[in-house]
Length: 532
Image (tube, rainbow, N blue to C red; front, side):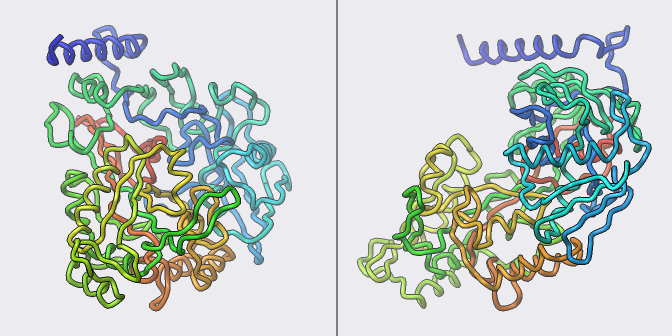
C-alpha cells in the first residue's frame, strides 16, 4: 500500500468515526449542524474522569462544577459561588458567604454542607489536590462556610478558585464518569477515548452560554486536523507547524500561555544522596558561572522562531505575565561575548584545546535529559546544546522515560515544563523545604533570603499583599532565584496554544493559559458566540 493510499484510508476512518459520533442529534432535518452547537477537538480527556476532589479542573475551568471564587480574564480573583469572603487578621480563618440561589444540575440546592463535603473529601483523597494546609472546615449557617488553616497561606485563594464543588448527596463511586454540578454546562455522555457531550445547564445561576451543546472529540492530531479541514469541527487544537497551512473557513487563534519549557540546574555539588539512594548534585551546574553564562547565551528568539514556528515567546521565569511576575527578570539574551567573559573570569579555560572548558580538573560537560517522545523538548535540548558548544560547554542529551528521569533529576539537568495560575508553584520549585519532594525543587536550591520572601508571601492575608514578596523572591535588587540572581533555572520559551477556529465564532477575550492540560480555552465559555 502506498503512502497516499494509507493517508486516504486514515482520512476515511476519521470521517467515519466523526460522522458516527456526531450523527445522532447534532443536525437538523436539512443535515446542517444547529447554530447553538459546537464540536471541539482540543484534547484534554482526563484519565481519571471529572471529579474535582481528585484533580479535575486544576488546569482550566471544571465546566460542570462551580468554584467558591474564580479568576476573570485578567486573572483577578472575583466572586462565583461565594458572593464575598473574609480572611482573619492572622490569615488562618477564611469565611465564605455563599449565594442562596444555586442548585445542582439535578435540581437539588447547593449549600454550605456541599462545600464542607467537597473540601473534606478532597483533603482525604490522597490525590494531586493539596489541602494539607487545611485544619478544618465547617458551616456557620446554611450558606456560610468557615475554613481554618494550620498556618497562613495567601495562595489558598487559588484553591478556592479551582476546586469545583460536588454534591454531597450524589458523590459516589461513579461520580467521575457521571458528574453532577452547578457549572454552566451539565454532563450528558462520555464515550471514553472517543467523545464527551455536554449541554447548557438550565439551572445555572450565572450568565447563560450562547451554545446549548458542546461535543468534545478525542482524536489524534492528524484526525483532528482532518476534521477541521472537512468542516466537521469548529475548534481544533493543532501543532504550531500546521498553523501556516490555510484551512478554508477556519482562522488561527494563538493564545498566550505560561506553558513554559526550561532547564533545571542541580544547584549543589555532587556527592549527596536521597534516603532512597538517588544521587543529588552536579559539579558542573553547581557553578554559578556555568549557569549564568548559559542563561545569557541562549538565543531564545531562535528557539521561538525555529522550533515553535513563531508561536510562543521568550521565557524568563516560571510565571511570565502573571500578576506575581517580576518584570525585572527580563534581560538581553544571546550575549555570547559576555558569557565567554563570565566563564573566563571564573577560571574555566580550554587547557587541552579540545573545545571543552575545564576548571580544577573538571570538564564543562554535563547531561541534559528530557522525556522521550516529546518532540518539542527534544528539539529545544538539541538547539541549546548546539548553542552552548561554541562557548566550550558540552551538553550530552538523553531522552528518557519519566520513571528514568525520576532517578536522575536531582543530579542531571532536566528540560521540564511548568506553568500555573497559582503562585504556590513558585514556592514548590524554589523553597528549600521542598527540595527533593518529587518533582518540586529538583535542584536542591537553598536561599534563606528568597525563602523569607516566599514565607512572607504565604503569610499575607490577601493575594495583592503577597505580590511584592513573590516578586522580591525572584529578584530584590541584590538577591533572588531568577536569572538576575542565582539562575537556578534557565527558562527558555513559553508556548502559544494554537487553535483552528471557525471564522463564524467569536471566543471573546482569551486569558493567559496554564500548562497544557484540561480545557483552559473554555474558561470564558460564556463569552463565546456565533457571528455571521
